Length: 438
Image: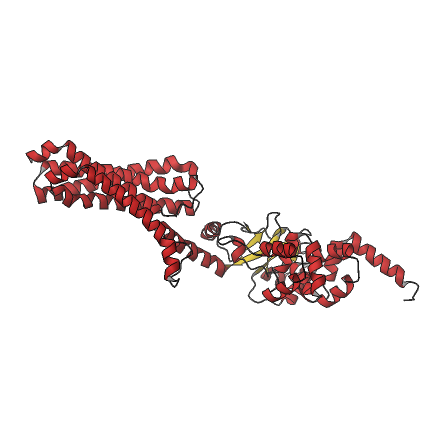
């Protein structure tokens, strides 16, 4: 090539990069990151940056890590923030810090915030270092890309379009047995499930319980592929969500662990214990209203825990079933009438059955018909109320935007104790004459 033609070739190349950045990026991805940098760095930023942004994030990150930190910071500052965050997510902490060291502090803080995700969302547990395939590639191109990635254990890869939006998935087995000249779109299948990067962990649990999948692709708010949640992370999310619900239902913090410091545990548990103490005083106040009745009929004090204990167990059953239904998306707020009606009927039937057994035991113990009637009536009323409370507590919490697992058992215990004590002692007061006759 003569010296006279070099400027013309350079001008044509620059025009090509400027007018067709995505097509240029597809061709550049076949080169080593250092070679890509050699081609793009001499160009004006408004020409080179669109091409760099069109590269796959792993390729763009590899190139970014090999250029001077001040240049990398400038490119990140000028790039589309979600694209810059996707590239930074491919780098380890040291390389990420190096690239951001020369950036404006506000820009660096914004990009760090985009890379980090809140607790308990899909983006926090995804693997961002899973490189996708381009939808317009051939099977042969996909195999070459797979060899370049050098990642073991892959069962499938995800396919994106030119805008990096998720287009589907392709199984590695299909790539291996298909003619290399076949377009990749012919072996691409629709994704089984997709989650957003800010979707809560509960959504992942629901997906895993309803779909036999090993990996779940994660997309951003614009549908662009940002990573994959692997099967091991899915299983860990299920275990974490289950154990968190167990803790929060009794007022323990979801952040506490078995080896957390005593100070941390006390600061998380003590407020709920104080709340529980206040509710216990409320239940005690109800008992205090009937102090004279208990003084006249001391047998009531013996039987009072029986009624409260049974209603508490019945309420816990209703609470557990409702909580599970909400967690698995089997029910929503619009089903509240069906859930409450069901639990009321269950409470009535179980209440009558348990009341019959209680009546028999009380009669054998006391030979008092009045005491039998008091216990039986209070048992039916308290178990119906317990079923209603167990169903309504998580639904009401969800209605007001609260986590239905948060201290539901404390609220339930308060309701069952107050209703159980009031019904038992109130009926005893009304039937005082019958108790005296017995």
